[in-house]
Every structure is written in structure tokens, then in C-alpha cells.
Amino acid sequence: MITKDRDSKPDTDPRQKAGAQVERDVAFYLRREFGETSDVFIINDLRVQLKNETAQIDHLVIYNKGFIIIESKSIRGEVKINEQLEWSRTVKGRWTGMPSPIEQAKLQSQLLKALLNENAQSLLEKVAFLQGYFGGRCWDQLCAASNDALIDRNSAPKSISKKLTKAESIGSAVKKLIKQHRSGTILNANPNFSRDELYRIINFLIDQHTPTATSSAADIEIVPSSTSRDSAEDKTTKPSIEYGFSCKKCQSKETEPKYGKYGYYVFCPQCKTNTAMRIRCHSCNSSGLKVTKKKDTYSISCDCGEGTQVVFR
Image 1: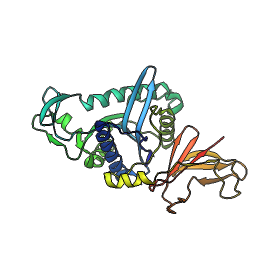
Image 2 (image 1 turned 30 degrees about the horizontal axis):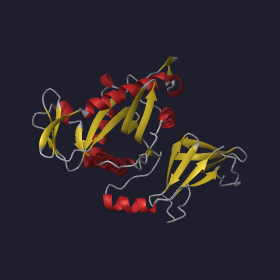
Image 3 (image 1 turned 90 degrees about the vertical axis):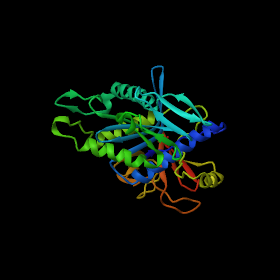
Image 4 (image 1 turned 60 degrees about the horizontal axis):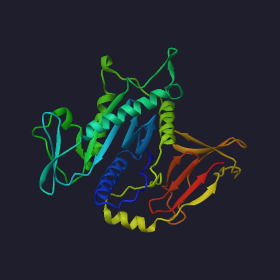
């Protein structure tokens, strides 16, 4: 399930455009692999802060065993890693050093873990009267390179090589990690998150997201083709704003937003009815709209570019 899409950002610099493209591609492949699943959750473009530090996470996978942080990298030429774990790439035919995306993802994991541990009392249930924390969960990192990158694995250590994949293979890499951890032995078993814990963690992280000054949260970007994307952007209009979401039974707008097994819905205190937060697109009449949340604003968006923002007073 996709719980947050990429923020909309201006791509004025060629490097920014290339980086944004591979992020869009990875988000697309993650949606294709996990968009209809109910036990794997994807948060794209998450920016969280703890004290004076910030972690900008391109893609975060959350499942019952833990977390997978994915760093997207625009690499148009060759990339290789030597035995000392040093990364290099070609730029216009010349080799140059580059920071390790895996080490970058590890730093993001550390900050994310610290943030979650600081709020563990409200996120995790107690076991045998003891407060649980996030240290015993699975924490993995992956790097997704551009589809046209040439990856030289001859000298790369296996521990690093298996963490590096192309964008088109990211779904398979994530599924492999999840299967590996879920089939762990009794002697090497990581604890499971309950369904309620997963929902609390997801809602907490989305509430913690702080877009950059030039970003607009919760834009939907699911098409990796630049031609199709440009076409979709041409159709994008400023979303309409509504206050409250009507109850399907009594039509009252005095409803309360909630999150459950099947996504976002509203509860009506007057008639005690639950209503899925779904509408048909005013432009193309599609019913497959996606809901994302930022504080008290819920954005209901369609692939065609039409959008509605629902604000609860």
C-alpha cells in the first residue's frame, strides 16, 4: 500500500531533473509491486527531523518485521565499488569518486530509529509489562540506480553488491528481503509489529514529515516515462478544497477522519457509521483515487491530475 507519494519539487537543474526522474521510476516500480498489498507499506520522499538533524529518505518500506530504506541514485554511466567499500562512477567518460549511498541510508536509518525510540511509548505496545523499542527490528538499506547504469560487480563485496540494484528490479529486491526476514529461524527471529502498531507508526511518520520550502506534499507521480509525465503535468490543476467528508448514511459533515485496514475513512458520531474516504474523479470519473495525509489535510488525487483537499476543522 502506498501511504505517501513524492512531494512536488521544482526541477530546474539538470542534476535535479535526473535525480527526480530516478525517484519517480523507483516510486512507480514500488507502486506496481506493492500498491495493492495490505501488509507492506510505502512512504515516498520522507523528511523527518530530530533535534538539529534531518533525514531525507527517498523511499521507506515498512512491514511487520521492520524497515527498508531505499536511496535512489541517478547514475547514467558506470559505477563500481572496490574492496575498501569506496564508490566511483563515470561522468562524461571520466572516473570520479562518489559518496556511498548505502552509508547515507545507514545514517538515515540511525536518525529514524532514534526518532521512533523517542516516541516508542505511544507507538509500541508493552510486552510482559515491558516497553518495547525499535532496536530489535529489521533495518535494511538498498540503493536503486538508474535503469541505464552499468554496474561493475567484479570487485564489489557481496554484502554491498546485493544492496545495489537498478530501479526496475527494486520490487524484487524488497520482496527478497521481506521473505528472508519473515522466514527467519526460531533462534534468529525478530519481533513482529502488530497491525495497530504498524498503523500508528505510519501515521506518526507522515505527521512528522516536513517538506522543504519549495515542496508541495503528497503529489502523485507513478509514471516513469518522461513523455507520459509531461502529459500528466499539463493536466494538473489546483486542487479544490472541501471542509469535512460526508457520512454515507446521514450526509453529515461532522465526521472524524481515521485510518484502518483498508485505508482512510471517516466515522460519524451521530449515526455511528464508517464511510470510506473515496470519491469519483470529477474530470475522468475514475474511482481509483489515492488518499494521502498531511496533518489535518487529506489530499484525494487522481492519476489524471485532478485533486481535492479535505480539511477537518
